[in-house]
Length: 349
Image (cartoon, rainbow, N blue to C red; front, side, top):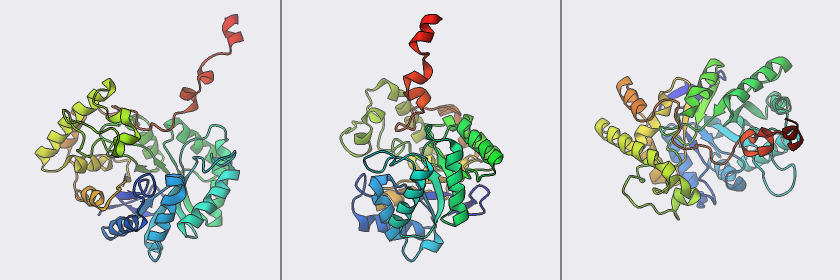
């Protein structure tokens, strides 16, 4: 396993991190099996474990906490806050009120006294970023968290948060966690250069493009849209959907390239994001032990310039062949009132 320093924190993390989104009701409900997966990853040199409070409504954090008993000091533990946790108002978001409550609930579920990296899961345009940075800075000073970062933030909001931190003397986001894969390269145009310029660590999620690069989904093969990953987002996998034609075509070319290299498509897919100089780690999200073994089988694979040039020909740099974050959309796109003048103004014009 290779290791890199996480931004400017001085914390060394493995190039491949263990993501636990599939632990619990959403993926693998067998807690004992999930604990074995964590232990196997740690035994193979993985030292960064990433979870979130909302993964299976807290169940993932509880599983991780159980798995790390007796091994906590050897692990860089990351979790997240933002998405609603339960019914009612003020049970989510990036406010001081919610973050202070959420972090202590995460500590309880994780059975730990501190969190190494606490990440804001998505932007919250109802909360001033100064409010968010202020409470996170207080948590660092209190020793509750060691560092904090953001996840799936647009480049302009990363820059804005940095400027606010500098003006107000607050701590800054030390990391960003964006989606990045062979089929979703959009962040190469802005997010990755911004992170690199400001010395931020980058932990990329969905390097297998939500399972599309697992090797199971190929042109001409039937796809069961009621099981596995396709059941969660059928539109992403449906071969008949016009928007998927380019993805399936690219997968065929990438699979051919992997064969020429004597490796597998998933191994090629995982080696690609960590070849970018801005990327610190790629997060693996296995549901089973077999999946973990398959993902880590190519942990030593590195890509030379000729291979990266071939990839650029198949999927041009900065190109997204699908919308990598299908859960969250900025209000500027999801709220029509934010891109339309009030009726009275339109009438006056």
